[in-house]
Length: 114
Image 1 (cartoon, rainbow, N blue to C red):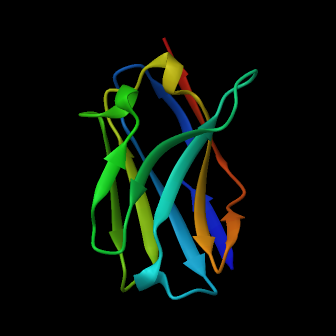
Image 2 (image 1 turned 120 degrees about the vertical axis):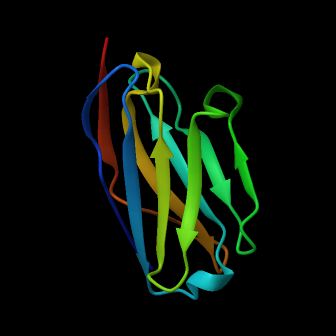
């Protein structure tokens, strides 16, 4: 399994970014996909999840601002991040649990300037 995250960058507070994660080596249509983020001094935090049928869940701090979605044909999962805050900054990772193992992408850095 390979996950390739992209789309991070520098944005001003209040701005938007869209992260993408490309997945290979699994039956993507059957996979529940997660986005996590990690900030210095904190544990990696689950930000959003999307199941194979499109059901989504979010950590409370991102509800109403972030949208997770998927394109099964292109094997991509997205995280649209709106109204970004300085506390949203960090390295964002996509993750999938497949055949009993957790697989992580390499992370993409999001920086939010105040």
